[in-house]
Image (cartoon, rainbow, N blue to C red):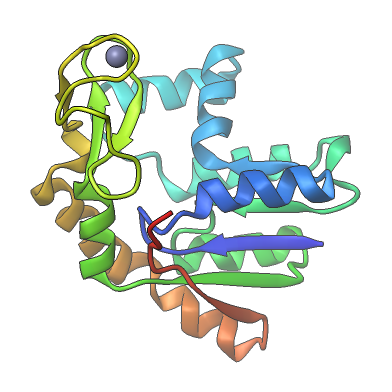
Length: 197
Ligand SMILES: [Zn+2]
């Protein structure tokens, strides 16, 4: 079962990928993890990624593709895998097609408004890093960490302007993949609207 999880930031891809990967005992491959591992192991590509990130640039398609290709040659992927956060562009998708055949692409269908509602509700304890959500997982006392009494803050990434920028990049660069995989008859839509627990 070789899967791609496709969807905007805040659609819940990572959370579901972790569950499905554990259930089917297949690796959950995210580009963020691949970058971090390469940096930690100080591989030649890892050193390159480190310097790109340090200079505030985005890692290019070429380097990302090479890192994903290396990852897909490891011996734990025989039973399948979930790609999370890759491909992010049409050129990346085309490169992936030259490396391996994907069985299914799961498209996390969610509106920009719902993404904004979900991400902008996130809070993090300034002190211990515990995560909260103002709708889905509230602290007992408003803006106070249940664990340590620390103050809750909004991460830079979860501020409205930053969310809107990430959504804009997604709609422009990544959303064209929905049609790309639909044409190949590989797309499955799932309703990723947030649900209160
Ligand atoms: Zn805390």
